Image (cartoon, rainbow, N blue to C red; front, side, top):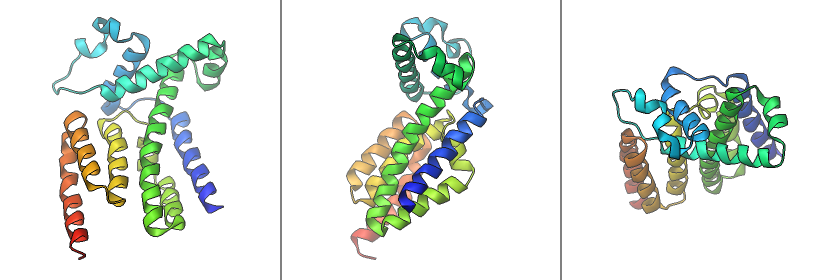
Length: 209
């Protein structure tokens, strides 16, 4: 029973932050705009992309924005085909804000995918109750549930990072290392710092310390 309640609580908190605060912070503006451009313009019209005119001083990857943008584009196309787009988007908000809410919910689903992989690993190691409390403790704090739907590079990189931690908990060190290395190269270079504590844990575990 607790396992079902904790899932519902966490999902309600995540969705609540998206609906109550759908607008963008300055730090996520580049990825938010990129999601908008991929969704509304498509890669075939990239000459109209905002970041080509306002590129900023630091090179950025928009792979995460590309995935979210095209998923949103696909969902809107399907809803339009079945004549449901106007009704569903009207429930969320008007215009681009409705698209932004959908995009944030999509990112939240990806975050949940990575987080649940970690929770399942914790449950295998320490029992179902421990995994349930991990969900509830996460839902009770502000930072992680709020930022799970924000288009910050850290949030996008957190998805494969959580999945990698789940692999590490289950003893798949090689796969976890490969995933963190790929995420470091593609999304966020400072993930290299995770390799130190993981390496220490693996060494101690192999030596039964």
